[in-house]
Image (cartoon, rainbow, N blue to C red; front, side, top):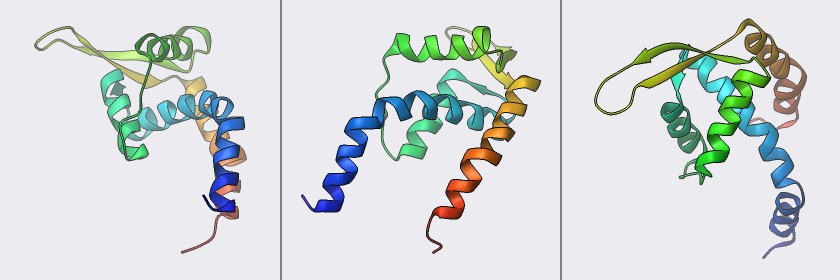
Length: 120
């Protein structure tokens, strides 16, 4: 393993869990914002697409995260329910607080990081 790859792996090992706890909520907000609404299944599918692989989720951990974003943080809310075959599918939208937080994260975190990345 090269020195740079080893350094990356060490960073991920050391900080990965911490970053994951920040990254997943941001990705959920991003996906809902871009699509105006999204179901839990659509959110998981789009995270997999962004990652370029199937992301392993603990079923209960994922739904606890969704519940925290909805009930504790007040960032998302159910805005539509569709009943087709099987269980009803709940679609979430961003609350005003969720939109404000997402926009602030873009300004203070994402855009500054993008400026640091090399241009193609």
